[in-house]
Image: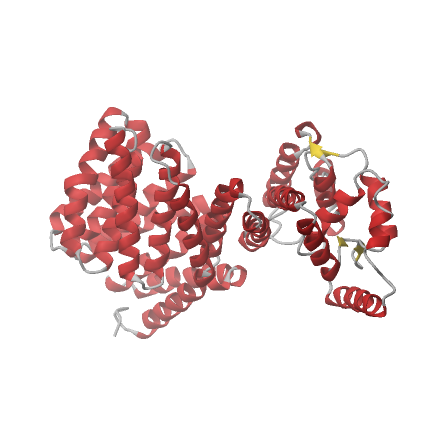
Length: 514
């Protein structure tokens, strides 16, 4: 909502109340005889910002899955993306009228499809007319609907006073449903997703604060997902309280007789540990990782074999935390005595499901072996990870192609550390090639491509192939610039590091760090 609209509404409302010209009793009484009007007004009052008509529909409507068209909408979005990509139209806002006629014709069947919420209401229009006529619900200059904040606060106060707390809780629940639909239908990019999820989280938080204990898991989940997206945006300080809240809620919800509650707790602890590590809070990070591992060990003890795969994943993160604190031998002991043997056994029994996990674990194990001066073992483990990765990347699935590319990037670093530069360059170049192919169809892989180019540039510089190093690093810097333009917090540091690396490669005759 435009700031002026808020100001105008607030001034008008404040002046009227101060003059005694307006009492809520009269306008509210005018709504009593109109079906759905009071529900619509209270429901609209819980939104924190002006909303479209679909948000009002959620407040007075009933679920009707057949009314929604998200699948059709997503198909149309995908077709539009494919058509524009084939025509080499750059990403971003597109004005269809400025496109060539053949392209407009190709886009026409999909362009005007808009998402429809899976909700129906018989009395929205009459209820809306009554609310607008009462002056308690207003519109802004963009045609969005809102209840002025003082009126909204008074409506909530009266509802609680009149023993209608459940009505306010229900309104917040419906508002959360609306924002979840809006997230699926409209949110494009992490910033928009974070904005919508903030609203989902707000409404669950309000419901929980009003005593709705049934919303606790919804609040925990929205906290957890919001935290991960804020992380993606580089907004780590903002994400931490949400991870902590998810853990706190899920500790309260944990029930040994319901394994799913323990799994959710362990997953939240695992991510909290990762976030604390990013923020330099190593001891707290390690505590969270140990607790996550303890929960999965408890689950495995209660139901042997049921949670082994999940346990190996959190053990891998625990090993990373230990290694990050300089406890490489402890990390290796954990992986070699517990995690890797379990993964090998699982992979032998079900290669299709578990070999990719084994390959990922071996990719992470090899640098630790290298740090412990066990170079030959590191190279052997890295080579095994690539062999497994090739087998599964043959399917062409993006995740598996990305895993092979990451294994090759890692192996290139190991080879370079062993002064086997030509082999290292071959591995790095193949990694870049795979990530380049992947980034063409999965935009999120652009950051992986940029990192692989940085690492290849470093190896080329070490091999005294300065011109090739500069080309690789120049491309990496260009990629990071684009990524940082869209997400400054997420890529500012990487851009700065890649830029320094490029300058050093240009300045140093051997391409090495002075």
